[in-house]
Image 1 (cartoon, rainbow, N blue to C red):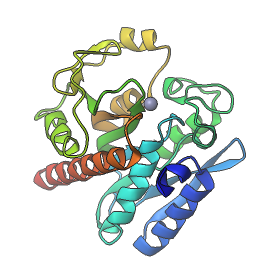
Image 2 (image 1 turned 180 degrees about the horizontal axis):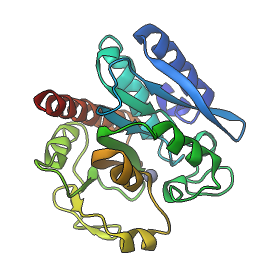
Image 3 (image 1 turned 180 degrees about the vertical axis):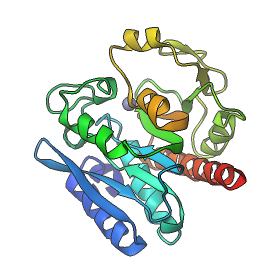
Length: 257
Ligand SMILES: [Zn+2]
């Protein structure tokens, strides 16, 4: 195993990388909640306004370490330009899960099915931190252990859609998942496009982060899934390429408004 894959479940190490980066890049990195004895952080850049920008969230499921690793690796690689990009980041929403390589948090709760709940402190704190913000894009980073390649969910709302362009850059590093049925959805070349449907989320068993963002804080919402059984370097590179392209598209769109 590479050094990165040995350390990708080491939350204190991840926090040290973010602290170092925030200092050198001139961005904010701040604790906003405690969970299982860990501080939980957000990062934001000086270029972020309350009415636009890109929201990126990683590590809500602790057994998907490609997400947290990709976000810090991408941010480190773009340290010189980071403060000029409008970004709001959750580097890891589930430190306990990441540390133990489990999907759920310290109370056995799937945080990505808990955005309707008032009794989960980290979710309440997330909602509070997000309250004043409207984003151009919400990008949620996930991994799928059944995944046979990269794929994404894009909410069917504002056009032009970005899903195909994002899959294209990700496909430089990973195969595209060619399954037609994924979970409870229909996929075409790695893109699952759907409208919001409350029955679907009742079926899932609770409100996911992406749907909460889409309803309350974001014009566009995209959830990317990398295959967690593939090697970490490829997953990190694919997600990094997708983050770059997402930010580029969002900044262009904001510039055109
Ligand atoms: Zn996930």
